[in-house]
Amino acid sequence: MPLSRLLSERNGNVIREQSGMDSSNEYLLQMEATSDKEFIDLKQFVLPLKVGVDLGTSNIVVTVLDQQNRPVAFESESADVVKDGIVVQYLDAVRILERLKGRLEKRLNTKLAEAATAIPPGIIAGNTKVISNVVENAGFHVTHLVDEPEAAAVMMGIRDGIVVDIGGGTTGVSAVKDGQVLYSMDEPTGGTHMTLVISGAMKLEFSEAEQYKKSQDNYQQVFTMTQPVMEKMAHITCSFMKEQEGPVYLAGGTSCIKGIETVFQKYLGIEVYKPENPLLVTPIGIAMSIPSVKEKA
Picture 1 (cartoon, rainbow, N blue to C red):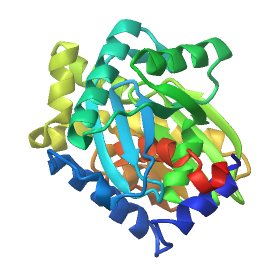
Picture 2: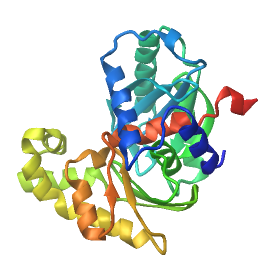
Picture 3: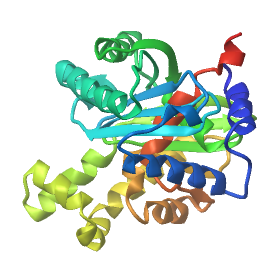
């Protein structure tokens, strides 16, 4: 389905246009609130459910929406099974996804049979098949494949601008014009590189450095140590923007770092927006990419 049509469906259902990122942030907070619910009554939702699976470098996330794109539930788990868009730990990826699926099915008291998933920019056909196979072997039937930047653009309602998806392994840059993705590019600089910088500076093992990075108590030290990496990500964005202008919209787990948007804005000299929870942006957009029952008809 064209991005412009997905954007129309997205804005025609739950999320209404508001100033700036207000509507997207409100939606993300609604999705986050579902994590506190041990059991979810599906009577309040329009079925069948839409499921989005995001196999990220640092996290695997599964989101569930209803037919009106209202947030139902999500589950996530840290993972080290994907590197630069390639599944490097196949069985571990399947097992983690099976656990997430099982937890959701228990909370929803229903089976989740179908799902959409996403592929990063520049991935070759063989690797696309591997990503689909992971989702299939975890017990889903894959009904839709969507590009990650397209999913992020749909979730944030972007018709014009630059989507920068910063994951654990890469910084992906996509230009959106009039609701169409003009191009997408990817470069291997992400959260993992930040962790390596911390590991070297603090003389910590990689796993210890990762935990140090995630602790809010260490925010100021982490920001100071990793600012050069953030500036490199901003440089990657600048080099890929070509003639397309901003604004810039950040997504992906590494964008969760407090203050990263300030670094980007100072480096690029244009408006930079970051949603409340960048980690959930792409997984939600993947689920939104599934046409409604009416659209299928």
